[in-house]
Length: 99
Figure 1 (tube, rainbow, N blue to C red):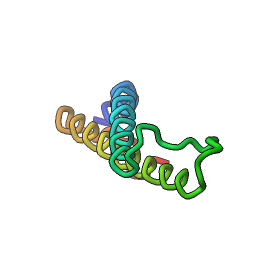
Figure 2 (figure 1 turned 135 degrees about the vertical axis):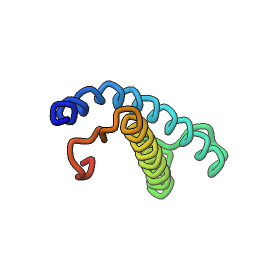
Figure 3 (figure 1 turned 120 degrees about the vertical axis):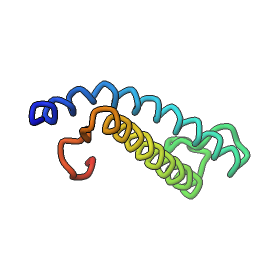
């Protein structure tokens, strides 16, 4: 059991990478739809856009950050639970946080 526990996090890395990539794409799509619903614009402001104000730029950043954090956590948790269900081993090395 000890060897399986040590090797699983390494084996989970490619799965985690693919889930992260898919989650990022999903979060980007969710942010674009949310921004369109909030501001009725197709494009969110960029921090370097001289025609946008601080409030609008920071609002967009806060919404985007919240959406990405929620999607990332949901994707990570779903992947970890699927691995644990199929192997009987939780894929994280320790119980600490991500960062």
